[in-house]
Length: 306
Figure 1 (tube, rainbow, N blue to C red):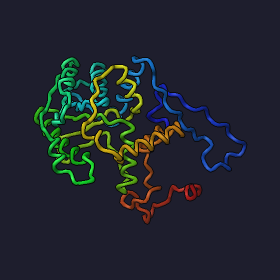
Figure 2 (spheres, rainbow, N blue to C red):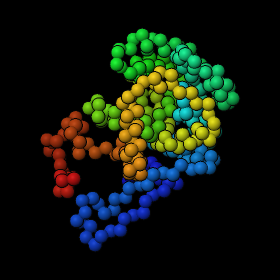
Figure 3 (cartoon, rainbow, N blue to C red):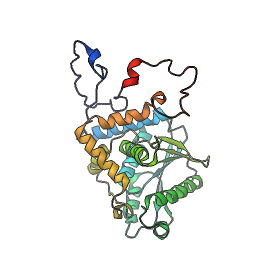
Figure 4 (tube, helix red, strand yellow):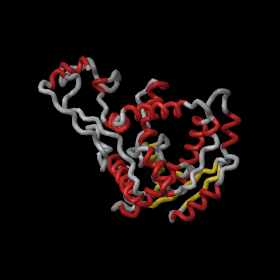
C-alpha cells in the first residue's frame, strides 16, 4: 500500500521473514516499508521517471483537459524550471491536447536578473509573458516587526496571478510544488495551525474562475535538484526568502531531512498517508459520526490498541 505513488522503477526493501506465530507482532506481518527511491544518474532516464510521476498525478486528480491553456508559473527557482521543461515533454506526448503559456511575475526584487529568466523563456519554445507588478516594496512597508514576508507576499502574488490568468485566457494555473512541499505543509499545519491539511494537487479557487494544479505532487525534491543540475537551469534564489532566518517551513524541511536519513521509506510513506485518510481513526466529528447507528460496525479489536 505504501508503494502506491513511488513504485515506478524504485528500489524496495526486501520483505522481512515471517515468524511462525505472526499474531504476536504488534504490526501486520505483511507490512513492508519502501526504501528511499534512488535518483537516476542518467538524464534521459530521470526525465522519463519524472514525466511518468507527473502524468500519473495529472491522471489521478484530473488536472488536464482537452483544450486547456495552462499558465506555468515561472519564479526562477529550480522547481519552476523543471515544471516548464517537463510540462513541455508531457505536452508533446500526451493524447490530451493543451497549450502552455509560461508566465513570470516580476515583483521588483532589487537585483533580480529578469533578463536571465527571459532569455531562457525565449529559448524554451513555449509562448511566455512577463507581468510587471512591483510588490516587493509593498511587502516590506506593510510587514509587521518579527513577521515573515511569505504570507503577505503569497497573497499578493496569488491575486495578481489569478487576474493575469483570466486576462490571458488561461484555464489552469500550474505551480511547481513537489512531494516534499506537500509533506512540509502538512507538518506546518499539524504542528502550528492545529489542522490536518496540506496542499491540494488540484484547487478550484474561491473566485470560481481559476483552477490551480500541482503536477509535481508525486515528485521527490532530490530528483528535481538532480535534474536541474543536469539541465544547468539558470536558477535564481528569492531575494526576500533568503533574508529571513528561522522560518518554520525551513525548520520542517530540516526535520524531514533528519527523518529521511534515519528512516529511508518515511517520505514515500508520508505522501501515501495523505492519499489514504481514515476518518474513523481521527477525532473530527464532522467527518465521522461516532454516535451514529453504524458507528464502529467495521471495527476490529486490535484497532483499539494500536
